[in-house]
Amino acid sequence: MRIRYFYQGNEKYFAVSAESVVLGRPRPGVHIDIDLTPDLRVSRPHARISIVDGKYWIEDLGSANGTEVDGQAIKGMGKVRLEPGQTIQISETKIEVENGEPQADLNRSWADEDKTFIDTHGVPIDISEMLDAAGPIFQRGETIDLSRAQALTLLYQLPLQFSEQNDFGILLQTITERLVEIIPGASRGALLLQDPVTGELLLKAHVPVGQPSISMTLATRTMARRRGFIWRDSLDPSQSQILNRMKTGMYVPLIWKDRVLGIACVDNDQTKTIFSMDDLRLMLAVAHYAAMAAAQNQLQDELRRNSVLFGRLLTNFSPKLRETLVSRAAHGRLRLGGERSEVVILESDIRRFTQLTSGMDSDDVMDLLNDYFSALIDAIFKHDGTVDKINGDAILAVFGSPEPDSLRHEKAVRAALAMQSAMTEVSEVRRRRRQVTCTIGIGVHCGEVLHGFIGSNDRMQLTVIGDVANWTARYCAGAAGGEILISPALHQRLWRYIDAELVRIDTKHEGLLSAYRLTGVKNAIRT
Image 1 (cartoon, rainbow, N blue to C red):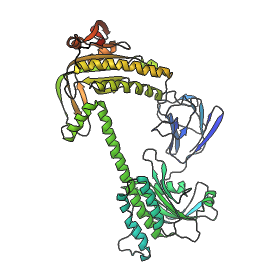
Image 2: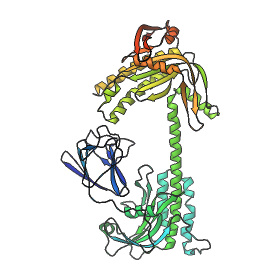
Image 3: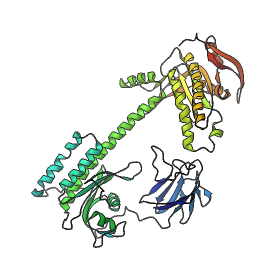
Image 4: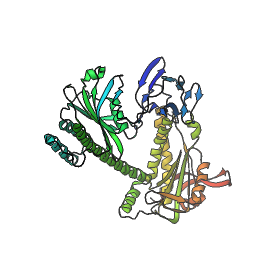
């Protein structure tokens, strides 16, 4: 894929063998192939160009300011066919995909007689031997060459490295070093793993120190064909082959449970060196070990992510409640089910959120929400509240669930006041940074609900069911920015401990509704 892009008179060129590329501005945790910085109206990410069925397609990834193809906006249209010669406009950046159909499908079979192909430099490469990487390496009853006893000893000892080395990077380097030791005549080696998210081949280890000797053409083809092979250069080597003194080598895929995880390769700069089928078999054996180590590392990463996910799920609860829930889960007492009891529900909502964020970059909107929500949720947790859900710019919190709390009414109003104070503090910081600020309205109500954990044993979440949440939404909607409205039901419990004034709010379905505007708490309130 070859792409040119222009911004304020500057031209850049991008070329890579890939089925898709992402355009935009980078941010932590998001992969960007083509960085369109310093065009600041470009989103992070912005759009994707891909190859499907031999054709080019472009898709806007929900950007703030959209994407145009020949002047036609394509945001919200999904994948749009990109014809040769069409111009892409992203903010002030113009993008052109060079004419020409994408390269032929790499997944076609290698016929037995097809032992020569052209590399990326237009040079023929001859394939002398091939071996199915998913099949048996050695046949039953096959005689093993005793001259390879030392290589086999190194091969048998390789799994011991798995238990002795905790650093995955060092383990891959050790495997690569052993690979070069095991294969007679190999002077250089490398190991690449495929990124499970982007599909990009990442260099993980190579020997010796210095510039690795790798052909990405051979690497992608051995993965696509799932075959290991021996190659030798042609009589007219390419420039890269001359610079790296590459004469012959072997490439094999790393396969585990029918998944291709990467490739391993070795080569030699000596014309007299000839790799044999036995060399290829040994290399595939090492590749299987490397694939097993890579799969195990991916499994450990997945377990770590799941552990982090469990921790994130617990972030809906205050620290005190987290300890209780973890203890219940450890003893098998965190189960599905609900109970009826009286709780206090608090809802906050950002005022004029749609108008405030209109035209803002999606990442700037997320920054705004994160700045305010982190402070708001902290205020809720400090008063032992539980975040039931976050819905766009609104937060719904409950006090007295999932664990009973006799002080839930007092804690809810203290949390509401703390949230408004937090909004003022965050707004002051953002104002000094010349960033957009906002206000929230808060409604608080109490009543009997059905609450508890629903779902399945594999996926459960806390939920609150009842009209109390709907009435809380009415009070929240009636509160202006910076205001806290509490229901008469809550006021009659706390009237001795709070400062509040009676007001009337207009609702869509119920007409005028009585509420109390909370202005503070008295020192006599219980804590």
